[in-house]
Amino acid sequence: MSQPSLFKIVLEDFEQPIKNDPALNSKFELFFNYPGVWALVNYRFAHWLYTKNFKLLARMIMGITQIITNLDIHPGATIGRRVFFDHAFGVVIGETAIIEDDVLIYQGVTLGGVNLNRGVKRHPTIKSGSVIGSGAKVLGDIIIGHNCRIGSNSVVVKPVPDDSTAVGIPARVITKGRDKNPMAHNKIPDINKELFAYLFKRVKVLEDAMGTCDKPSCQKDIARKDIELEEIYEMYLKSIKD
Image (cartoon, rainbow, N blue to C red):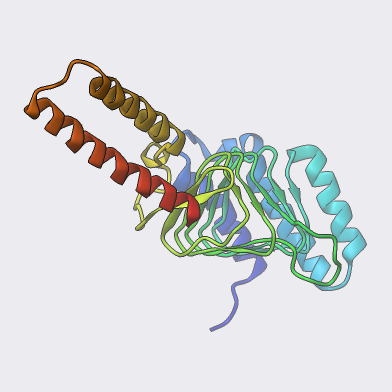
């Protein structure tokens, strides 16, 4: 199967805001309101030059692009087709990062390295169909699997399996199973909130146990709640270990 031309790939880049951003009212807005698109288009040409060993020129193009768009994309990175940077400001993509097809990346995302060794892969690989939430940091030579969702402001330092959702600092896999709506961030659970809810319920159970609850039915109810809370706590500990 022949590879698509650079021109066709660039046309696909311009089509992504139309498909992914309901705020777009006119194609004319693409020229003024979508810095992520322009940064990606400039990257396409700079990456082509970079692979032809015109590395200094490629770096110059992306340096100017960074000043204009506020996106820092190394021309050596590998970015697939139909990738969309939504809002895009503050996105950083390192030299050895790999982004496969149909990936959605929000503002403030960093695909960074954790070592200074030359000649090795230092940055993450993002598999096709994944969504990286705003402010997320994905660090090191790790793989984010197909169709994954990384919660906003998460710090990911370990691989994430296919069809998973990861959140937190450091990020933990909390659910498995693909959501058909990649923008449904409201469905990502808040682990810290759930822990606080557990603590409040635990305190309530202890207060009831130390109070005037001396009837068998009341004591049985407290025992039942205690078992439920223990199960919740075990699930929380398991999510941290995983």
